[in-house]
Length: 176
Image (cartoon, rainbow, N blue to C red; front, top):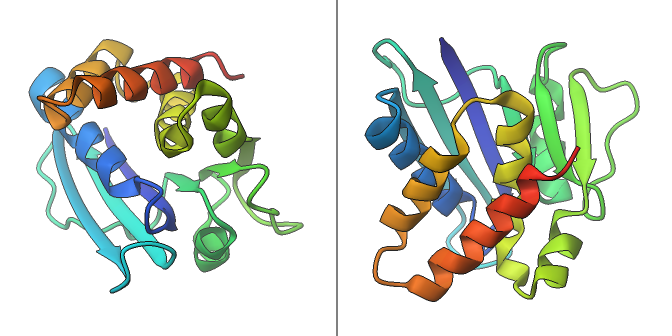
């Protein structure tokens, strides 16, 4: 098993945090090898940001994604940057209020209003973890309890953040 995952959006949407949680969940809870690399603009918020995560039951020789199996696009700029890299087998999760998919694009597009759902939960910053829940439900890539442990480890000492992100992740698990 080897899965190449791109988490993309703009600065401030938490795609790096989601990548860190996925890594913690896979390495510490499921004994799956993981690598992560992140790239973001010089500004703290508002510029293109991406995190590459590679999960494998074997050794990972290269930490960057060559061809994404799974991609999350939380902003149009992120979708536009990757649309030409989609294959027929790529699962493309996107925020349906923020991204307009390109007609005829390859892959399977799965849209949900992640940001809107996050606002309804009381924390606009939790759209990323709602998206993570939706991705894990659809793919079964990581067990929910492993991701919840990853959230607890990544945000240790910040109980409100842990609770908010777990609640968001659980909301994502309910999405079809």
